[in-house]
Image (cartoon, rainbow, N blue to C red; front, side, top):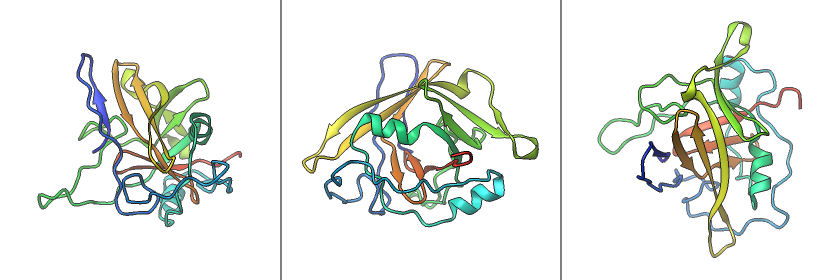
Length: 202
């Protein structure tokens, strides 16, 4: 798991998202420079009729090329909105087992959310499925908070590594470098947390 987490106190760990062999992931050996003009500008393809079944079907589509993001305003524009959680693919942990299925908060064994929503006012919240495929926000200080973007590194090819910090209302922070697939529009946080864009109403 490559979420870095800060509990109350002075301890910070800096662990960035690592690649899994695909060409669009940071750390995968894809050192092409970002294309001129920033974002690819393709249509946003995700899920337009949200339900557990339609989300699972949309998440099953192959991931496309990386959506190159060259600035914080571009990343913010690409991430604001509702994202539905894709099921994790079992991945060997090197010890004969597989990595556990982490919830958004990064705590092993916690309940897996239906998704996460990032508001334009720099607030985020997790949500679950309700009756009739409705969305129900999770209550409590551990399921909502604020988010912040910052550039942490620019490599020799001009790629900007933009970190996002998620600060829970319960005084805990996780931070990671998000990566997006363009078509379909999938948000990847840490090693294995994948979310597909909600395009309903767009």
